[in-house]
Amino acid sequence: MDTRDDPLAERWSAVTVRVYLTGNVAVEDGDLLVPERRFPARQGRLAFAVLAWERHRAISSDELAEIVWDGEPPNAWRSALRAIISKLRTALGESATIEQAFGCYQLRLPVDAWVDVEACDAAIHEAESALLDDASDRAMGWALVANAIARRSFLAGDDSEWTEHRREHLRQVRVRALEVRGQVSLLNGDHVGTATDAQIILGLDPYRETALTLLMKAHLAAGNPAHALAAYEELRVGLAKDLGTSPSAESEAVFLDALAASGALTRDAGSAPSRAVRSPPRSRSSRRST
Image (tube, rainbow, N blue to C red; front, side, top):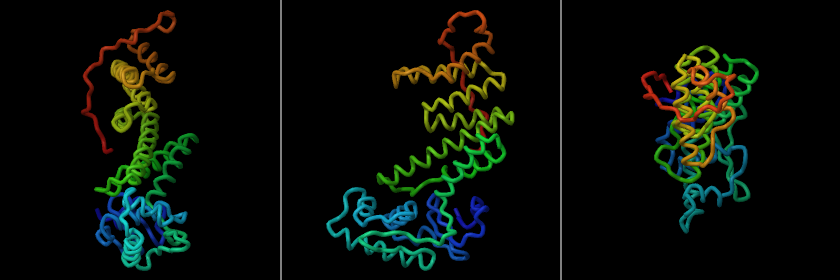
């Protein structure tokens, strides 16, 4: 992927330096592009990612070595780390500087620099705030930005503990972005889009009940209460079997709405509804870009 053509930084079009940690690692400084192949191997790429993600604080050489060598630094790690930093400085040129003082390293970027993972965190905050303010169009726009960044690969091929934690962070941001997108779609009458987003979320986090209730509401709005009941039953069985718990009160409320819509429950009857629901075949034919 050529990160120079990335459309996600339009709001920051005047910035002098852009740093991409998702997808292909790269640094863009005006017409100058430092592509991933210029970074010194796996360890150099990882060291840069750590310094960029944590750029607002100084990182001790000990901490950086622990991350770069995933808890098992070599005997001569100090000289090896200095060599990695030296190669990074050469690759970055004047686009960014790596300062060293008191046994610590810190990446310095221009004050108006744009870093994709920071933009991702800012976007999901804006999306959720806009949704609370009933600004659905704005919420959708920011959710699209957060999802587009968070869904990308992160340091492909690296399996260090630090990298896995950051991947989990991005996964959670993506889940939140999809929930915002799904809720806005529901408000706009796009039931298929809402159901699709909810199913993607449940694929990422099978026990996320907010996604389950979103899926049930989409099925109900589309006039398919049986599918809503089936989704609830699948969650109920999974929670009981795997976690020894029950669905939340919100999930239960949507379940009762689905029962009423299906004719299996009369609200005024006062009888306890049965939780045994036969699951119809799940349709996955309606998909959209994830």
